[in-house]
Image (cartoon, rainbow, N blue to C red):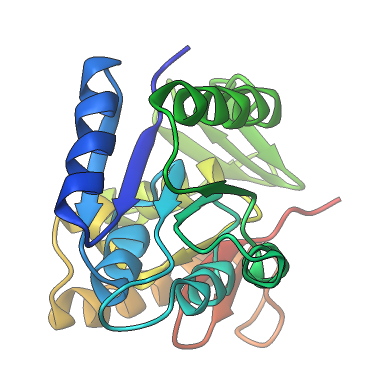
Length: 230
């Protein structure tokens, strides 16, 4: 089982060091954010598999971070907080957290919670086929070709990369930042402008018209999602 990428959101250096040392010792990949704003940026840029989130952040409450991430992603979020009142747990879980671990916690319990999430992720993630089929659209990843109604699509390299990224995440909203990081390796403002242009040309080759999206749905101000057709 491949180790997931974990985003650690924690401003307390001692707790952060404990968590990251534990993750490193067990060969987990991880990112670190010390406040809510950085956490949201890292989550949208790198699309981690799991988020370990403290609630008492210096710039915003962790529940607000959960709400923002849940507006575009279902990535598992495990809260790690000193708040032990039932109301705090309920607020976090109602906002969209998947689990709640109270400080102080044992390393063994943290690892056990991560294993539970990993098992759930492995059951939810099917083994990727070399060919993606969605209605009349077919993407042959091995051959590097895409077809619509059995007619080969003539795509530019960027258009093909966009199509592959969307199809590999079918049904998920991908943020502008996540897409530009994966396509261009950066997220400058001109990258987002370029993304809109390339997405428009790709849609012209896939869709019947701009007002009838069959495969790619725009989430204004957020990003794009490939629609799963019947």
